[in-house]
Length: 126
Image 1 (cartoon, one colour):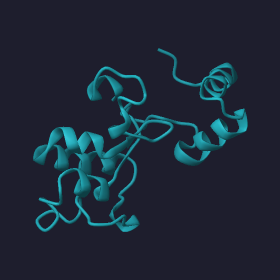
Image 2: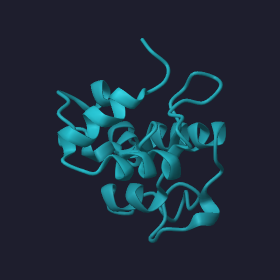
Image 3: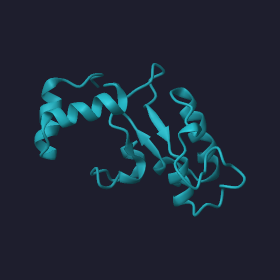
């Protein structure tokens, strides 16, 4: 498995998505600074508490406000490796909805988009 996207990879994505090459590169730069993995080898993620709240109908919000929130709240982000800790806490409550509530990898695609990305399952997407 290769570890970096090449110019050819970016051009292929731009053609497939019918977007300007600059758009693909801009998203990569903003969303993951052109890296999709942490030093540990784990995928870069952001756990979205407001999405977890929505997907679970808010059943965890009162008890776990750090991982389930009625609205987007930047202060809940911990960044880097700590995001995996937040995800792990949510996974213990509802694995599937927790995984769907994180944005994954270089382009920070939300887990709930796994099917739209052409994957057979959420786990294969991850």
